[in-house]
Length: 546
Image (tube, rainbow, N blue to C red):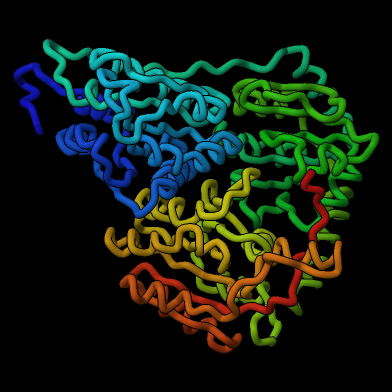
């Protein structure tokens, strides 16, 4: 059903699509559902590409992935009932990652509500705790304004997910007369409190051992240039996690990673930018007892820091970091930087043996040593794994913003194929590498069919150790045994990908790795390099998850 827009008669799906287009949307991720037909028709009429997947979870993760690599809201359309519930994990992920995304839901018709229509369920009560905005269209005429409100909520700091569903009758009905096309409203951002800025400047000016710990909201706040300028002006060592990785190139003279424990514990002043003091920072205990902490973020957090802080700077991050740079003046931390660099180099030297390890099955470090040799500087790394992903985080460097996508603190496996799909669609000329565990493949491995159908040349590199390593090793350490932590050894996931039409490689020994990677990248096709890895290797964890 396609109606003539020139007649002034538009159906609800066309109204949805027009507002998506007004907000700059170019791709809509979805899995075919009858409740969404009018939205599909509207998108086709408005020139928005439909990207269909094999599970609604992937459609929603692709929307989040699009946000992560473009810093613009990603959009998914999920059919009523199970379509929406299948996307819930991605909403939870986007909430914790502050990823701006909009989910459009189908919904049973309003005129028969309560009579038992197919997939009739009220989504809002269970979606609302995960999103910044949730609404149901009460009429066809309400549709444009609700879509606009969803985008405004998704883009307002703290950014995050929003949800609107459309009853079947309203979204298929025609709207007589001229549909409104209001200008897109820009979100408002505040500025840091001047008194708090003064307090922060005073501490940074007097600091002898300063450190910066920055994370995901630095990226969402688009403050990477100001971060670099601040670090260079004050000579402050920088550590990054989450989407903050790459916001200072890994080979910058002030970029560190291995010396983090020493740096955070030994700092006299720590500037914590866009990252909560959660389990990744020991709930604040990663810093020394006497460390004065300055927190800066795009907006006030939902929960207060777990320990006392010296200053709180909430608002426009580029402006905040520029004010700190101008106020604190030039710093001289050469001795402190040299001390940390020596620790960094010593730890890198300690890793060289494992990077060249000759065992078969392979040590995970050896896999990533090989991967580093074939990846471009702007390659986008997608992590969908447990221990294998942790080794990737340790070894694989990021040099540009938006080049490192892991599940984040929600830790949801199965996000990788959706992220990778979106990343390659957004940046078709760049390498996109999907770092997979064999366990994670079970969540969304069939999305290789999606990659093949759409011609998306993502290269997957799998660490296949036949176990749930993130659970097996800790459980054995605690109890002396493990249960429900074993998979089938040496499963040929590569043959699954080949059956779906992709390029496939199996690697059993280190000498086979480089050739397999070269062929995978050269194929231009969706590829999986299935690397058998040593199940006895346990990642040396130090963080307290709770």
